[in-house]
Length: 168
Image (tube, rainbow, N blue to C red; front, top):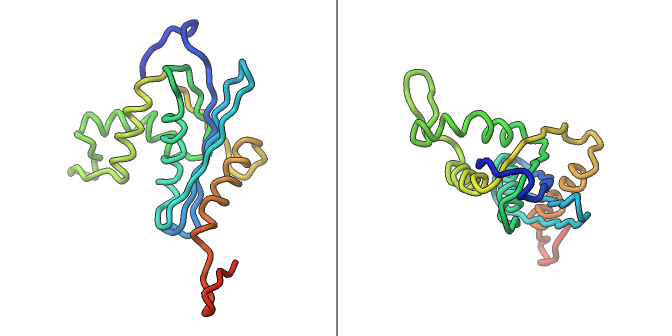
């Protein structure tokens, strides 16, 4: 994460959430990108047929970061402790250890390494702070992201009947 003079960059909020039906199972991600000064917002979501909740939480952040067009002061708001601790606490140690984690006296590969590396590259362009919110506690943007993420994975949950027609 870079130090960018506050007066030279816009401030943006990135609300994210991931969801999974089973873990692993069909999953969805969603984000809301908001520029408070102008009130402009961008929403996006997507899904995968077979994934994990942590991968969807990370994908939501990555897709939101990819939507930013220039360096910014960014607040990432998420209910994912995995993502928050990952880039604020764990990632610096992983990088020092060649993207590995210590397990006892040995180093082991980190899970989701390709996503952590991608997130690291994107985060380096911005001045970032992380805000954790509790999921399913009425936080408006977190609830909206959850709704979008669930809708994104539901298309993978439809079963086909013996007549070839989709069932809900």
